[in-house]
Length: 401
Image 1 (cartoon, one colour):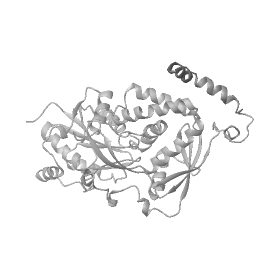
Image 2 (cartoon, one colour; image 1 turned 180 degrees about the horizontal axis):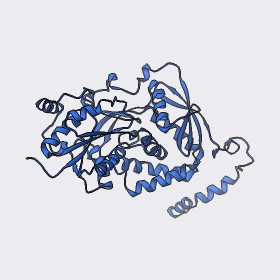
Image 3 (cartoon, rainbow, N blue to C red; image 1 turned 30 degrees about the horizontal axis):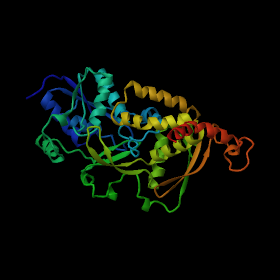
Image 4 (cartoon, rainbow, N blue to C red; image 1 turned 120 degrees about the vertical axis):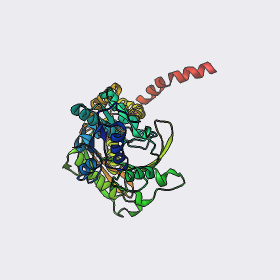
């Protein structure tokens, strides 16, 4: 039965199999105009033919926006400042890109007078939540169409059969059974061979990095300079945010940096096996953490450690446009004002090894830290400090006696 409740819909479009099927499906089932929106967030694909693909499958227009710099500056860099890592391993590459894409999708829907938005996320994944949480936060009046929760297509084979039946050519994209998401920060691999936990990832699956075994036998030293907790230069060269990440991706990927193979807890409740490649991001997070260790005072640093799992969780769960995220970002921006300096690391066969730390805001004082004699630290002062520090323990022990 056709649904005539929608007149015009903006579809988050990638040009892959799912979204190629969604365009004719929307026209067939909703009899509506379909406008496609594609975001270039550094996924590294040739997007020159994207408009032809969208129009040839029934879209009225394609809007393609280059968001690489905004993604890097306004989404990735604040994330680096937070230092948050989901479940101790995942650097949230997909999670921090979805709010940006969905934000522009809503903006385009408003500009084009659309009454609905659509996405190609499955009913089992996290991305459906990330997109729709953004829709609700920015324009709750838009109707949301999620074909994977409505249609009878259950597999890649079903999707290909649908295109064949409608005389639509197959998209010329990755034919593998892996579900992938790529952007400037990372690439993820799920599904296919990886669904059986007995299987190791196949080497030909990786896109951003060589294996540590195939990496050069000679280490490479890299320096990263930060200002207010944001990276501004690599090896002394000032770069735009997107160019800086891409530069480190190339350097790190060459040395097998940033591969993660994990079983994570999805928001919907299931466990999922994913493999991630984040070469540049792994270097940046390592260097940022090292710089914080010498520039942040203890209580601020410890508070960040408490907040990291919570901040990672709200980003992972798609809660980007909520007040607490904005409040936490304000805390990070304030405490990051001292995180200035340069960290040098050596990259060798998948390893990141710190070689030097330098900052004008360094709180590390060699004359105090030394195990030798120091005029700035009197060892005898420690006795009174320890006696008072242990007062409650002494009282408790006396009561037990």
